Amino acid sequence: MARGDNSVLIVGSVALDSVETPTGKVERALGGAAVYSAVAASFFAAVRIVGVVGDDFPEEHLAFLISRGIDTSGLQVAKGKKTFHWQGAYLDDLNNAQTIKTELNVFENFKPELPSEYRLSKYVFLANIDPDLQLEVLDQIDSPQLVACDTMNFWIERKHPSLLNVLRKVDVAFMNDAEARLLTGQTNLNRAAHEIHKLGPNYVVIKKGEHGAVLYCDSDLCFMAAPYPLYEVVDPTGAGDTFAGGFMGYMAQAGVIDRDHLRRAVVYGSTLASFNVQDFSLNRLRTLTMNDINNRYEEFRRIVHFEPVE
Image (cartoon, rainbow, N blue to C red; front, side):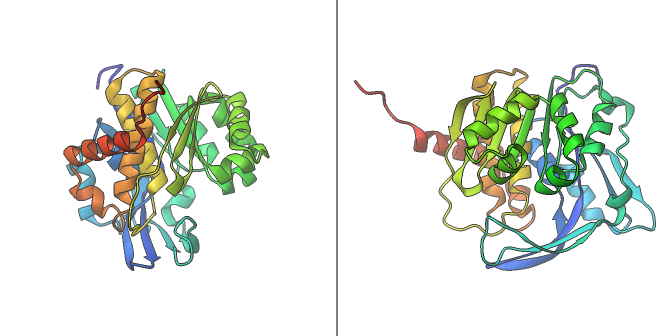
């Protein structure tokens, strides 16, 4: 594609997930941070995905990604190897996953290699992977316009220096409230976001699960998104990744980076995440339409609207 196109490049895990929640369970269903975020972003923009799978990765999963218009030429297939498998349960608290088993398989030796046209991507999302791998990706990118990263407690504790190097090079940092507090040592989220901003990112998005999300612009609190009032959550797996993918997809579609578009991106990210948790794996996103998304976006807007004091 030509230099300057608004495709979203997403690098991260592609997985087979086994998940149990109070409403049921699935075995070896499609999952992974790169998959959730890529499918969410695909509602708004062209998407390129970089990851690795084994030759046990079902053809129907690959066909689904392609059907969403996702470019999979950056998806490596390791012959004779098995795909990354995560098994977890949400039995006591839907906000916290209990990891039962993690089988890294092909992901253990994953080295992201970007096809030449991917290097021109202007919108880049570094999903939750080893910060050293995130840095390898950034070294292969030519003049990106907006770069975002996600992380987790494991990397904050085990790869702290590498994570700091990543944060120096990105524009947007996605973290949940526990991760932000762990990284900065600040219990107050406003102070935590201010400390993260000083590490490099211009924008910090604190994901608060069922309590919404908060956007900080240049360390100032510039937007709070309310949670969508769901009556039942089936499977929260991938909600944060779906949020980030929706955010980045909308920003790529808009092609403009300012506070108004960033605020809308947060609401679109929250909207996609609210759909994702209504079924296992990516099942709800498979049937989702842009009309569904825009209708719920308007519901979000109606919920938080209020009039000024006369």
